[in-house]
Length: 242
Length: 142
Ligand code: SF4
Ligand code: SF4
Image (cartoon, rainbow over all chains, first blue to last red; front, side):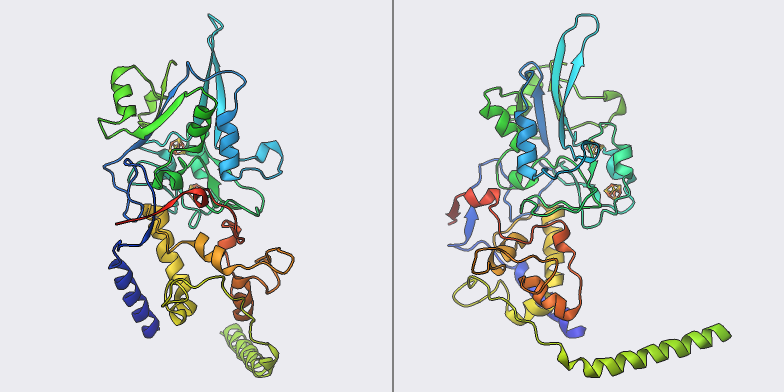
């Protein structure tokens, strides 16, 4: 026991000393990306701005991209099919005007899903991304009840051939993870990429703590709103044109 | 009290049976562990010395899973995707073995022998697969 503990300590010490030496392979990252070999910090707060005026009827590009990206393709009855992002239609009874909005985990600053989790599996990363650590999730589904946006799903059946970058499995709860592994490599969420590729450009993402970022500038310039502001959760997802 | 004594005798009996069957378990053959595809570097075959990997890979996985999941640290050397990509090898017809039974899968081969469950692959894929990051250009840092 002692020997193995010693070995592990040595190992951890050694690995802590590993620096990026010349010739070490790194992925190319955009300037805004955090250095994936260093921990994320609260200097960054990731957010999205969704312009509902640009989100059109009959388009499911973002939904399809999410299913593809995270492998949400299991053949299960619709009642238990995990949904990470849905498209909501809001209809003004008076005028009949319809507004479409993609709705996913709102990455709340004060997330009730984190408050209620008995194991600490539901947690908020320092940079504001709210995740489920499936290693410690016991599948109690308290968080599903606590989330006012119905953003979380439970995996009911055993899965196989999951995407390597997006592990998921039976008995745990899941929700939009902001494509966190893409974020860590300097790329944007798959839904935003898909919306852009369709030419709609209804969503942007960025660091809301950085006054120079596109999202911060737009938020300062134009009026935007959050869903259920009365709950004071300060979501990271903001909407225009609601 | 009496019940406790009976229980105690029972468990002693069980222990004896187990030891006896342990003696005759010489029939369990050593696992045939599939060879990894590559060496990590010219000096080292795996990310850490083999004896350390054999004994401590569980702890290392747990340590790095915490770093990645909670702190967003994603290194190119210590990654479960990289372990699977290098260690899980296809058979002659190009199919990857399942981790859930048999003993052909790298992880399964040893875990069957040691009679230890593997939970990792209830969520993580056990087969090498194209990942989003495989089309990202690795660059040399300076
Ligand atoms: S939207 Fe729901 S799941 Fe997401 S952080 Fe808020 S409470 Fe949690
Ligand atoms: S289902 Fe999992 S993440 Fe949600 S509250 Fe229970 S343990 Fe926490």
